[in-house]
Image 1: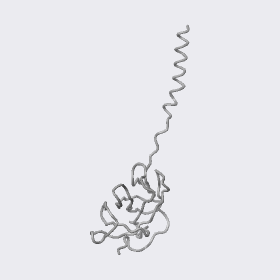
Image 2: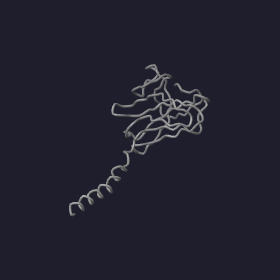
Image 3: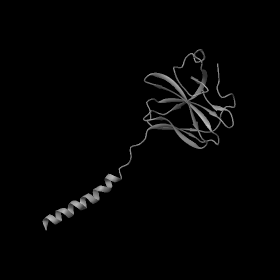
Image 4: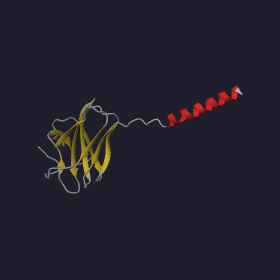
Length: 152
């Protein structure tokens, strides 16, 4: 009888403990994401500094009212830089941080001598992630109506 009670106690303990193992939360995803909260399709270029130095890369094509992961994994920098083009209505979102870009897919190392190296010099806007390991940029609101890429 004592053996039967031990089996029942063990089964009861397993039944109580099992749901705790099944309900463990999944590990959080740490990424840099961009959500296009506009009614237009947009092209996005990204600038950042990693262990190898400064880089800019593009293009991510993001549908209207959709999100896309630009970088997977925990963020390694506090500052990221974005340049975006409105494919449907023209104009762009940019800023004062000068980085290289081009019209086709690109990954460009370095910030200097863009034109001498055959690229455009483009103004990106700065994003402060506050040293978080996960960040979502929301693209919306005012954009310039100038040519998509500023050249100097």
